Image 1 (cartoon, rainbow, N blue to C red):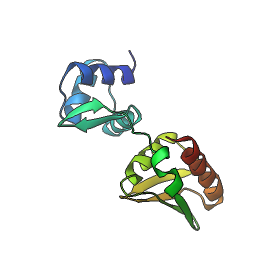
Image 2 (cartoon, helix red, strand yellow):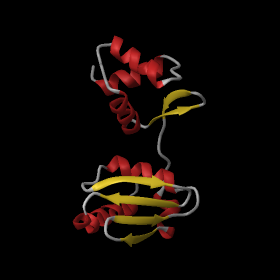
Image 3 (cartoon, rainbow, N blue to C red):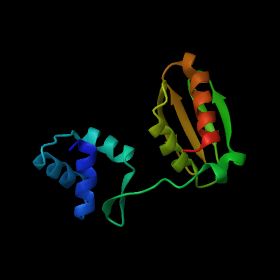
Image 4 (cartoon, rainbow, N blue to C red):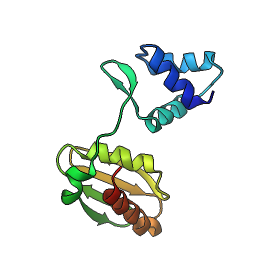
Length: 139
């Protein structure tokens, strides 16, 4: 059983309320992820803490609600600013981070604004294109 399967199995069988407890149980099952690796895997698997326990969640569809209201503003040399409808920035930011776009350093999302950091200014247009494609097809 791989790490992802072990995580999903543990959270479905038990009420796990703390990431450290999950990490200990994974170690007992023969996996030894670091805290940062475990956090990345939880994010990738759509596992979040809901009502005090870790559960698999689904990202709500974003595109239908925000596509007409999305705008991208370039902030050279290595930043993009994405404006959305209120309440959608974090959902879209998570979807963008999961996409693992080449050249994307990371995102910071508020309520209706996402700052998108690009690793190298020469990749600004490529990241913008990837963001536009994600907006068109949805997360």
